[in-house]
Amino acid sequence: MATDQTLSHTAPPPRLSIADRGLLTYKYLRVALPFPAAFILVALVIDRLTVGYWRNSISAYYEGPIRDVFVGGLIATAMCLIAYKGDSKFEDFALNFAGFNALLVALIPSNFEQAIAGEPTSKLPNGLTPDQYLTITRSELAALLVLSAVFVVLDRFIFSPEGFDWKSQPRLAKFLIGVSVVTEAVLVVEIVAFVVAGSTVWLGVGWIHNLAAIFLILNLSFAIASHGWPLRLTDPRGPVTVDQPSRGRGFYRAFASVMWICLAVGFAMIVRDFHRHELNGHWVIAEEVAGIVFFVVFWALASVDVWRLLRRRDLLR
Image (cartoon, rainbow, N blue to C red):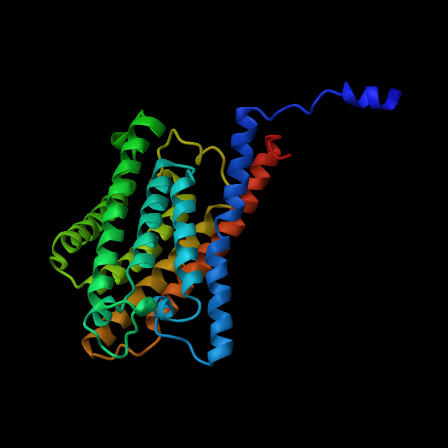
């Protein structure tokens, strides 16, 4: 009886403070972010071992048995990239743009135009007719534009009411952010035209997918570069110049440089094959898989540096 009375008067465990919950959420998000991308890689390998060959691009798996992994993994990765706050405004911009591009890659397959045209080599999902597929895709993209606009408003007036101090950014950061803004603007114009009229202004609908994939990898490389050149890519008042990762800037510089080389070579080969009308090679999937591998490895190693920083500050429990 005494034991029961003692237990009944035992004080409940203290609730986590808002700061502790925020830190715990950050740690979970940091750890979980690369898992959807890694899931896609595992599914690609399993498909390769099962069918005996690689498809031409990751989006080609949209018609296969791992479609759900491809679409779900990209959308989950996109949401995590957008939700995660970078170490600097520059990195945060790059991750947000990368997340938006990942959504486009997931929603628009590269063979969309062939599927709409009814070509026998392009299978429509779930037995849809071309008109139904066109209507559904346009509706999905319209919803994406509306929700993206809502998020931008919330981010500007609720999450970041102080805004973005453009003048304090280094010159190189301004240039790269400008590159990202221009490329995203081109994609948005094409998407608006497709939603409104069912056709695009400059490019085919399939190229929205291709360009979004390239810009996704490019913006991820910008995020990596912000750790390698913090004095040239981040606000000098920010935390990156103070809390230098233990791995050092040279590692991230080399990582970003190799990523840019792969992007340049892969893009050149894709353009070459396009002009030769030889799109049966594997340059596209090689480019996409390399981008995913680079991202997963970078995020894992950078997370180790973050953990060391948290431990030094007695924030890791």
